[in-house]
Length: 444
Image (cartoon, rainbow, N blue to C red; front, side, top):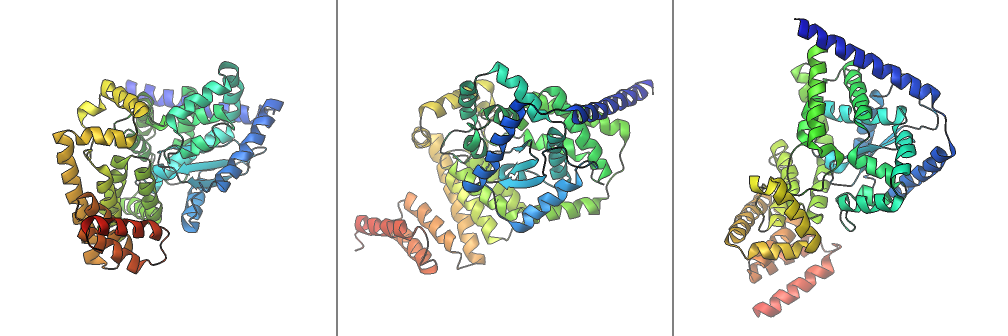
């Protein structure tokens, strides 16, 4: 009993101190030339994302994210030089970050990972605090003294390699405000991140959401879909474990009202319905970023939600085909620290195709390739049994059959694709494939 009372008292003090610190920082913050220079650069970030086509356009989904985000805003008016806006980025890295001007971005990779609206609300409430408490400015003032811009930019390139969709949001603007982009990877100080979590916890209760979903969000972010060491700050395991502990302690001490199961189910349905299209886009981006295991995990979530959707089954088939000689899940050995570092080293030395060739030289790689191709074939044919005119499936099936050296069948599949999509953007490339296959198979 005493231990429980002590926990409540400690949590109460933490909450009071957090609120007091927020009020003092917001009220007494004075802009300096350094801050205004940074703000000018930040305004360019919004414009660059728009210009580069990284902002995901879906009117209903954008309105929904804005609705959830605005419900998490503090009751006070927006701070000076802040205009709230919530946007979605085409980036399969599971991340979210706030610009000090009030624009809050959620990556498609994070949306495709979340399971319900309560988890989305917790992420947005957390990011809101970084804006209201001026964390970006405070971080920038301190960080620019410690690390040269060139060093920060080089550091960012490890997390957002050029030419990849993974980390595209960071790579696109890393040179504009590198210190802030570094913060979007590693987070701010432990104290500032804790303040943001505590605000989110209280705001969830105030908004009728279940703060118990916060630890669930952290657990989702701990998932290891890939065997590499390039992670966004949300994936930092020690930090996540710490956050799970103190939020769980707050749940125990405050005992917030339990949200009715039917309400939670309705919110889950709403989120998953509205994010279905962006999830499929995220799967495509993950495949382009050579992260087929991530793509498969997201596709499996989609087929669990809508098992008879041709588009969802097609996305899963594409993920299996992209796996090639890799297993659907990383092994325990691959996830070990030494193996992860070795994988990271190989990724620096070899291209994806070169690494794939090395795997195919092994019996285990050949076995995985065969299993993945069989799974993809079965899914493609399942799509066609539901929708015989699903054009992209014929293209995917053609690629699969070509890989299996079934040239005549591949030609038939490609021709069916062009019949259904005569104005396809890739029609020229597909016609070239058909001609090449016909020549090599003596079908001309």
